[in-house]
Image (cartoon, rainbow, N blue to C red; front, side, top):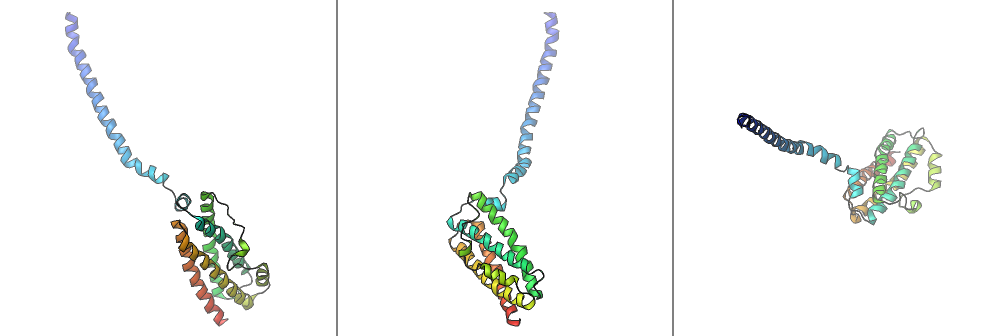
Length: 208
């Protein structure tokens, strides 16, 4: 009994210390997760946040959005083919500048629309390439490839005006009937940029 009485205070003290330490750790433990939630929440949410292209894929879309992307992809691709023909054939500095603008703008837009269609589970082609407004015929492309200098500049301007008008018409339909916000925004950019180039190409034709 004497031994027990000597050890009891020590045991109680030890128990109290352990309990205090446990409470301290619990308090710290509760605080750290909150800090982790405050500071770690943003990276987690940002890493899971969709990119602009992914948001278009995941967002609402309708048949008009799908048709816009499926038709605009080959339309843009033909514009790039026309632009490539300018290499070694174009003479006018303004024509060359428009060629560079077409190449800079339209390839990224093609990739964006391909991403949308993949996300929507739709094929890239609607099988309507030759029925679209503004598309050049095979003969048009051959005729463009056969000329150089001012003749090329003039023909390029004429064909690209018609081509751009077709793109503007399709983009206008998307603005009117589309359901996907990002697709409609791209349509608006197509209208803005290509109407400006139509006006500029018209001025070039007037002086050639």
